[in-house]
Image (tube, rainbow, N blue to C red; front, side, top):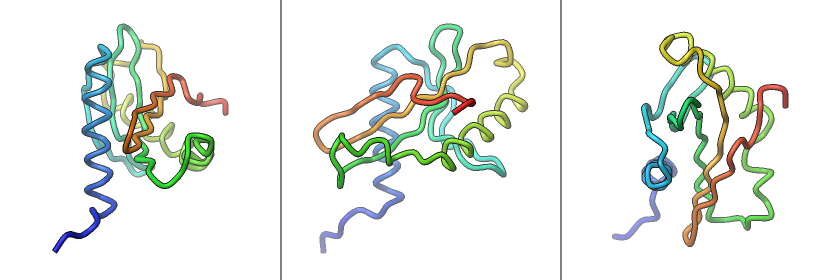
Length: 121
């Protein structure tokens, strides 16, 4: 019997696609699915002297015009707090610039929003 993939497996597949895409673009992926009391980071990457925290959204039900609804302010705060936990635990990255990206995966394409949000948002 063919079932639609559950949300978790769909998310993992999207994260795999995003990681492969970012690596092809030259970003090194150093961690995946980092958890803290604040939340979870899908991907953590290095791009030059910048540590990049990447949220991956598998986006099949909505058009690109609805991307602003993909990452709520509450979700952004959780990502930022989790990034702070990661940096506190991994002091080797403490002097680096920090960036928050979002990668949207749709059945037909990948959209990478660089510096999608900042802590001050």
